[in-house]
Amino acid sequence: MTQPDDVAATAGAQSVRRALAVLRVVATGQERGVRLTDVVSHTGLNRPTVHRLLRVLVEEGAVEQDSATRRYLIGGDVSLLGLARSARFPIRAIAEPHLRYLAESLGDTTFITIRHGADSVCIDRRPGSFPVKVLSIEIGARRPLGVGVSGLVLLASLPEAEAAEIVRRNARRLHALHVDPAELLERAAGTRALGYAYAPVGVVPGSRAIAVPVRLADGRTVAGLAMATITERLPNERVPGVVKQMQERAALIGAQAAEIARRRK
Image (cartoon, rainbow, N blue to C red):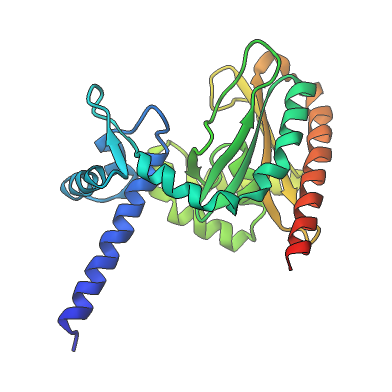
């Protein structure tokens, strides 16, 4: 027989999970924010529940609401809590000089992205020297794993069964972004065979993007290294050379990350 305390504990855990699901969707809005309807469609929760959770999160400082647009944004309290684990992402410090090098040598914006559960999160970027910059994703931006070239190399690095399960879990969010789950798995398989991800039509109209995996010595992929540029700057014949240069830097990042991990053991 279920005890009242057990029922309360289960309900409390469910509320926490729902609140975190709402926060993850709000985080995708970056500085622009997300609408109430966006949170409803991405989480699958009903409108009254989402509204109630957002109200509590606003009261607690975890979420803010723009008074003009009525959109929701991540609150300052969440950003401050994140500072307590700033050392959690040593890959960012390792990658920074390599991002800068690629941005300067290629002339275009570079990004480093990691996996976090069923999502990919951009943890750093460096604009290139070319006057027209493609800033397709903000630092801290969260997407369902497989969306965007970095997310695609991260998804492709997983065993096929695990990748399929993640895509299944993200199906509702993918549909909300007009991404077909079956096609995404096909693209992941193609990326796995190719060794890198290439988007001839990027997130930003008139752009193209490339990403390569950052691997440790044991073959594990720990990040995606990406570059985005305007279409005219990345004709098909330039792709192999750019990929080679990015793979060289990804190998250096992976080797440095592996060495730091070895020293900490």
